[in-house]
Amino acid sequence: MEENIIKAYSTRAQEYISALGSVKDMHEQDISSIINWGTKIAGPILDAGSGPGHWSGLLQSYGCDIRGIDMVPEFVDSASRRFPLVNFEIGDILNTAFNDSSFGGVLAWYSLIHLQPESRKEALNELGRVLRPGGTILLGAFLGPQGEKFDHAIAEAFYWSEAGIANDLEPANFQVISTHVRSSEDTRPHLEVLAQFIGAS
Image (cartoon, rainbow, N blue to C red):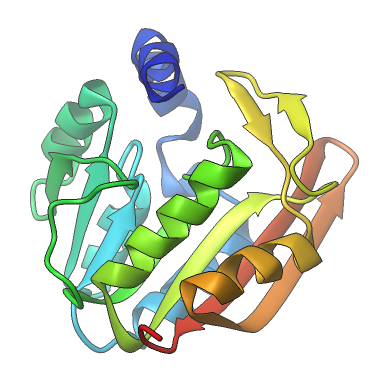
């Protein structure tokens, strides 16, 4: 599954970067949410699935200590050139190279949408492992029937429901702080979730 995702994004990386690789192309609510969250984090932030790197670049410009990981080499190479003050590296959300409790915050903005439901739970466990107790995760995803597949422009993806994401976060020792949804006629419904890692049980 992961190899298929990497191949799909690698093939269309430049197209994706051109279309969605700039903050100016993002929704103003998302920009505001990410800035407000990131600038309140105590300690380093991990952009887990950093893609074109624009969110990392934005947070770095606000003084955040942030680093990005992504499975797609073309994304990492491009992000490193475009945002040289941020450390980007190839990495797997399911098995990162970081020590326990390395980060005060994790941004997972649409980076879990292609994972099978069981793999998403595995990813949340791993992202919790690298978070400090009391740290937070900010997630972006497509809102819809829990676990239902849909044809994303790049690769097969899955919806998350509000109740479903809360149910997935709880076993990974996260407590949901807030959720926000957004709908419009020309895009799929959006789900934003802020959750706090309460520590290993």
